[in-house]
Structures are given as structure tokens and as C-alpha cells.
Length: 327
Image 1 (cartoon, rainbow, N blue to C red):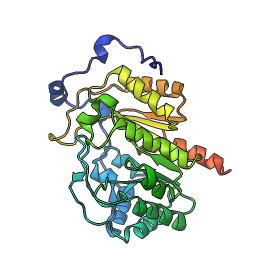
Image 2: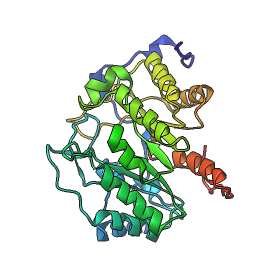
Image 3: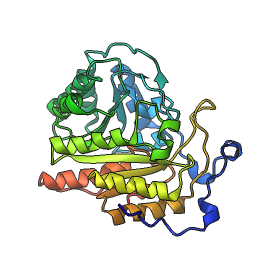
């Protein structure tokens, strides 16, 4: 496949900064996000505490929690299968272990109860990796989706899943999610440096392709972090390969280092650069693209694209939410 032309930039601006420069620089002003608080935040915090639920918003220290947990269209990403992951990716703040606690059998019902109480139009369910379980936790994950279907049938469900393939992916797809998301995270050259050795760009593409093979009507989504030393040609290659796997939605965001023990930031990518990549992605044929420094894989903007398409398929009128930053 021929390389997609990268956004027109001077060579000097494309040259990755050193890791030392990334560590010493202060975060630029465009990375400031509102602090969590207010009635909406307190309500969601109380609900997750009462039902002993985990959210990736908190576990992964998402900078958008103050925005996403506020307002009438408050959303959160529930994290199932516990809060401990069996993989050790160098970008992720979630706690890692060799063997985690067994999945809570009450969790699917609690997830369904929480979603029914919130009444969201769209919900994202994600999970830690559970290589210590024979099916990777796929059956438990599917039961969580089924409980949402039973208790909140109008809610659209996105599952942000581990790199399930084969039978494990079939188990997950049995829950009939509307959107299957799986993140490639970084360009191929940086996979072994940033992700757990068991992960790979190719396996991630297999997961995304596999979802479409099992359900031609499902929408798929992936995410790429920038600022870890990737080159423009590598980003172009990643976007092309994602579209080659028939991925519908894409999110692009700035990598932010959770702690000094994680991979360093090599570069803070300018908002204008993210806008250029957004245009490149649309030219490749993605149905929806959310691209910006604070965009994350479960960011509200990404949900809006999927919600609009799914509601149209179901023959229901989609109402544009009142948001100043809607793409």
C-alpha cells in the first residue's frame, strides 16, 4: 500500500525530541483540563462506590474526567473484570499483577444496574487484560453487556476490549455490542517499547478484523497515542492499516506520562497538528475521527459519531447534543 502523504510540515518540526527534553518540559497550556467536581461528578462517584464498580476514568487517571462526569449527558467508562491487569504496558497507570482476583460474579448485574440508573444514550465498557483466565474473561465481559441489554435496552453499548481472537472473541461478540473498540495504541515500531510483549500491531488488527467477520453490522474503533517518538510516515502507515482492516472510527490523542516509572513523553504535539491528522484520517475514509491533545479512546466526541450512525440504522431520530466542542 502506498504511503499516505503526511501533513505538510517543516522537517525540523517533525523530528522527535529526545526523551530528556520530554521529561524536562512543562505541559503546554493546551493540556489543561477542568478539575473534577460538582453535582454530576458526585453522583457518578457515589454510584460506582455503592455498586463496587471500577472506572477507567479513575484507574487510568483520565484528564477528561471533570468534563465527562459533568452535565446532563454525563458519561463514564466502566471497567470490568477487576482493577488489576496481567499485562505491563509502559504507558498505562492501571495496577499490574501476575494473577488477579477472580471476577466478581455480581459484577454483570451491578453494571446493568448502574447503566439503568444513569440512563445514558451511550455507554463504554472496557476491561483489564486477564491472561490468567482461560477465556481472557470474555464470557464474563459478555454477561455484562447482556445485563445492560436487559436492564437498559435503549442504551448503545461500546466494548473497548483486550486483543481477543478466535473463540474468546466469539464469546464477547455473543453479547451483541453495537461498537467493538480495540486500541493499537502506538505505531508498529514502538509496540515492543511501549506495550506488553504479548501485544502487537498485527494481533490488534486481527481483533478488529475478526469482529467484523463475526458481525458485518458491528462498528469498530481504534485509538493511537502521539508524542512517544513516532514519525509522520509511521502515523500515516498506522492509519492506512487501520482503514485496511475496515475500522470505522478513530481517536488520536497526546500521550501523557502517568508516573516517572512509565515511558517518557518525547514531544507535546500541537493542537494544529492533531487537526491536520484529523483531515488525513477523513481522507482515508474513516466514518468518524476525534483528534486532539486531550482526546482519549472513550472520549465523548468519539461516541457522538457512533451514536449518530447507530440511531440512523435503527430508524430513530438522533438529537444533536448541546456541546461547544462537537466535531
